[in-house]
Length: 245
Image (tube, rainbow, N blue to C red; front, side, top):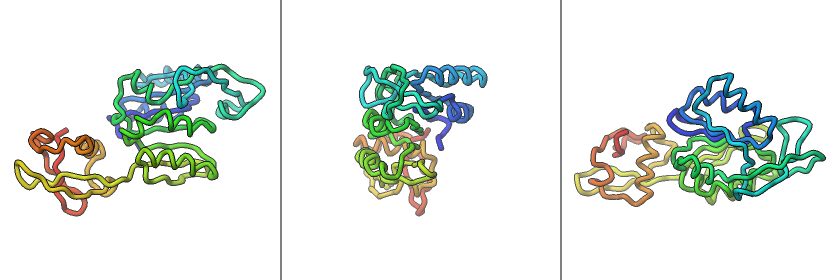
């Protein structure tokens, strides 16, 4: 689900089940949890598992940073919510996903997977990750009741997500399966363009990602973009020129 050299963002990390699972396999994890009790459990679990590659943040993800919200406390620790009132509550501070990346100096293109378990706050979280989801292309796993998927899908599609599929009773995965321009080398000073679908390539996602980002930035000069080009095969027997990594 996430390449080892990319970042996993665990939004609504609870006690860290998924943080621990992926933290053992990939280079960096960002775990965000607003509830004080859950956050203490998250800290303990990182210590017990000896994970040093995890950044722990005690915030509620939202569409604006620096706000104060009431986190309503459920009788079960994984049902706390800022959108569903309960008798008890805890005051929490908000942060956007874009602010998290800025504070930690992480580029949107370095994020490979975002898991969101926020009990009804998904729309606000998506809005607070506009730069992350527009400039990057992480796979997103989120919860939603079927009747709420349309509005969430509309926001994600505005960021370029073209495939949203249901993978459980209330679990969904969003992916950027758009079509990209790819370079086909035909000489030292000129290039021919073809259309290559991301999901149909046999290259690793990290290699393709670097190539496609450069293309999207308009860096179309072969000598500047690919000074040391490496030819790799793409499904369909096309030669795609990508930078060495």
